[in-house]
Figure (tube, rainbow, N blue to C red):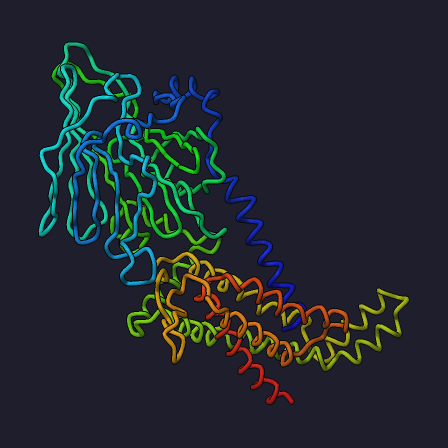
Amino acid sequence: MAYRVILAFVLSLLVILAYDYFFVRKQQPRQQPPQQFQKKVERIENHPKPPKVPVPQRAAKTDCGRDIIVSTSLYQATFCENGGYLKTFSLKKYREGVDPNSPPKRIILAKDAQPLSLRFLNTKLNKVSYSCSKDRLEVKGGKAQLCFIISSPSLLIKKIYTFYPDKYYFDLNIILENKGKDVFKDSLALSLANRWPQGRRYDFRGAIFFLNDRFKSLKQKKIKDGDFFVGRIKWLGLSDKYFMTTIVNKAFERASFVLKTHSEKLSCEFLTPPITLKQGEERAIPFLVYIGPKEIDRLKALGLNLDKAVNFGFFDSISKILLYVLKWFYKFTHNYGIAIIVLTFVIKILFWPLTHQSYKSMKDMQRLQPQIAKIRQRYKNDKVRMNQEIMNLYRTYKVNPMGGCLPIILQIPVFFALYYVLIYAIELRHAPFITYFPFTKKIWLADLSAKDPYYITPILMGISMVAQQKLTPSSVNPTQEKLMLFMPIFFTIIFLNFPSGLVIYWLVNNVLSIIQQVYINRRFK
């Protein structure tokens, strides 16, 4: 691989990393610290102040009552009767590991999370328990409801969950009725919380939200306890690399929410504007809750901009096009490993003219190296004259010195777009390529989102890079050429822990590049 091509690739990589580090973080609409911002929010926006203390961990000290189980074809959820909130949530179509007998994927991991718990900011009703008439709910054929009720002398509270078969979302309708003589006025806080196991350094775990018509995300390590946001909140939630738990706001044009982090647990609270109820008045506050995989087609079908949660970074638009193409190939191959190989072939064919021009330009540059060396020796004390003579040489032989680099630069956005797809797309989670190592029963490439356990594909990729270097025309000096010999080792070490799907793409791309280079070398011999 030519020195300029490697340099272009490395510089592009640095640009992407710099963008992720400096600009993505700065775009987050983090407000002023809550202590300085509370009065301004209350006076201008008429929103509740951000809570000064974490949500009370009531369930840790008291019995949460009966477990009420809701089962659909896609998930099984367990609700705590006393709190009317989720206790566990497991997906039936996804597993914890690649073994088909491994347990269903658990979305709610923290025992003290209490997602969908409801509390009032001022009214002293937070310690009152709910009651529910059902022990179990099977959702088949049509929608089904689960109702939790608190009836106090002053206020009637209902949390009505409506579940649908073959859907990861369900409705939550909160109904308040003022049964007292005085006017009721208070704000509600609806919470989500979770804790995730330690993952790889490039895995995402944090908060996601759609605020003021823009998607935003914050990694957990960048969240400060008490981060406060206010504006047009369409939805908010928590997410890891493949799954998300979100609340969709269907009741208020403007609202606020606060993020809290404590002992590796992350929580967010949706805060409603003040709600006023006269004597005997009733109000319904509707929400939609989505707990499930970040499947772009399923999320897009909801029409709530939830598909924005599937975000592939700087080249998001290109990444989503490549994902749709990859899924289209999968319909015919029924194997994402083969689909990746087919996609690599297609990309290589599309860029064949550019790559061909790049290799041809490098070959021409290699032929001119003896004459360039003579010019540099002759005018070594006159840099201006030396550069003029070299440019005259290029014009005489109609060689573009940047011809070997520019075609490669044009391909870099596609590479990075595909890179993010192969790392973050849920379609590749536990997707097998070659499940067992040939002629053995040892698990090999059974999960394209995980690394090669035996490091066979990264090593083959490194070997292919060495072969590619030997075949590619080089116009660098001997010192640079020796330096370039370390590039295959460098890339092999990096790719050892990369998802095997990405390594397969790079390996196949290198093999195709070697075939193309052999063809070009024979043609221009």
